[in-house]
Image 1 (cartoon, rainbow, N blue to C red):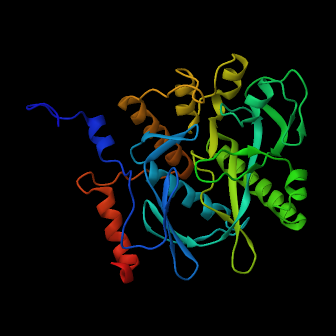
Image 2: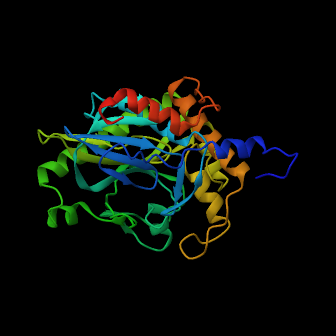
Image 3: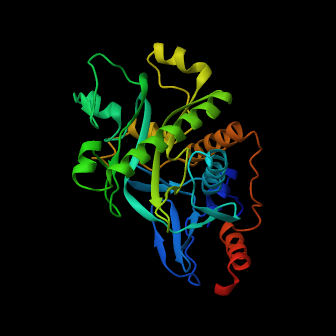
Length: 332
């Protein structure tokens, strides 16, 4: 409790209002990952609730105000904009943080599409290149490239999908086929759909003065065996976005691009420690608020809509529970 006669700061009030736990005992099939709490429901359905938990470098570090809502609504925008490119798993949106989806048979790889040589994690193309590797994910890179340089064309750099608490691992198309993670026909379709989704994303982002730099896709099979895009798409958690107007000037100056994505936090952390070998320091409230504003700015710029902040008088968890009780009354 704060000392008598004092009140929490506005920043702290926002942080205290974050959603960090979306486990509801009334619902079956609960599981938790870094950001989402999920439920497996009868009828091949799955409930995905995006919390405000923030992960980076394979750790959950803090909570970011409104993050879960931004992720769900940004993904909703992109699912709507790409449904003619690839079918998605969405059934309905019971709440701004919640999506009811088809329960797919998930494929055991993630497809990362990159159009720039960048990144700060161990598996990013730039980190591998900086360590001296020139054959990255099955693609050969020449000497002399620099960070944040544009590639001649987008490339697919797949990774294996880690078990709970594990790490993504680079893999090549040849290794995917040799290990029979997917069939040759599935791999061809996955690659084709990933590049088509990315092209659509870059096109619409460019119209809003943004560069979609790279992104991660996850796919599954529905009950007909159709390949379906799953989880999220083109959100600031799974993608990098740069401001187009300032990219060239900052690149030529050797500065990091102006960005509206998760890299904001990764760079803040990397400037203060080696996140893979040292403890990550506590993230100040003002940094988390800046991060929240970055995500909101991306949503508003992409969609052209003002972000609707929830009523702070109503706990987010209580609001979600009420929405679920209405959408799934058989459980409440």
